[in-house]
Length: 186
Image (tube, rainbow, N blue to C red; front, side, top):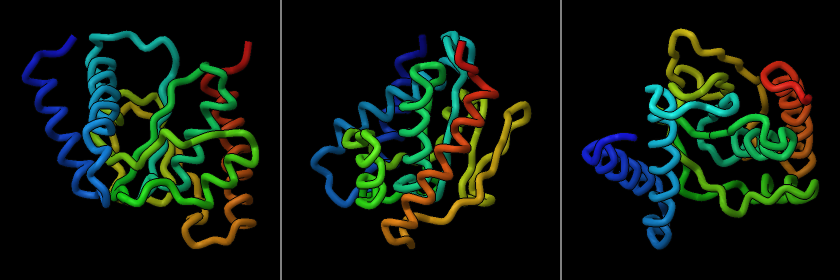
């Protein structure tokens, strides 16, 4: 797959990136393992070492604690494995996923307890077939040959629970449209 030096570099970078935003360091090693594994898979896919079985969608927002997490969770739920999903933030927060986002997703039977804000890295962008941005502006890298979509959505951090529900429902509708284009149900 990839060399030992690459693995060591990705693990180190992942630990450092997550550590910068982490408010609590207790779970940092476990989160680093998950983040580094995903980045190494993305790196192997983008360099052709590993074939992609399904299209890859990357959702990006600023903090990776609201919109992009909702989009990723809804995509996983609605796609039934027809796509692989990642999410990231241009400036991820160490505060975890917004409680209001957890609440409105739980209302429709989606659990995001194991998710956490992740920093945006080149390897996950390169592995993506579609990159959906949500308010990250110029901080989102652009690569030739990638499909980019920008979704104008309010930031759930500034909304009451009803407003977060509206964002969730808008994201759900957009995810359904995106899935019908990228991975139609058979």
